[in-house]
Image (cartoon, rainbow, N blue to C red; front, side, top):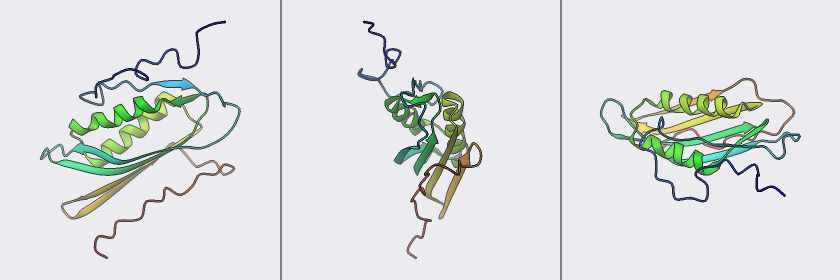
Length: 155
């Protein structure tokens, strides 16, 4: 019997791992999808995402929702949390943060389909929502609404 499992190559799970200083330094890990023959949707919600304004250095806050239909790979969730946390010291506009995360995950996982919604809290009185997806949503699989209401302020 072998000690090798789909989890054997992971370097962060089950170990003390410091928060990376930047997204470039972060290591996103993947594992083989043990249900690769089944089509289903995975959702990650990060309601306290933080990055920095590249011009002022002030913090920006967002509620991120990531949905994907996996193929051969799943993202390992601890590595995803550390990757997203690495943005807290990273200066970039909302659009760049949101789309960069979507592109990085799509490249790593090669999913059947992926989308990310970045629901950014107001800066200068204006909220910015950013959406990216890899293509049309599969019509034959349940993909729920992201459930984040449009910003209404006091309205």
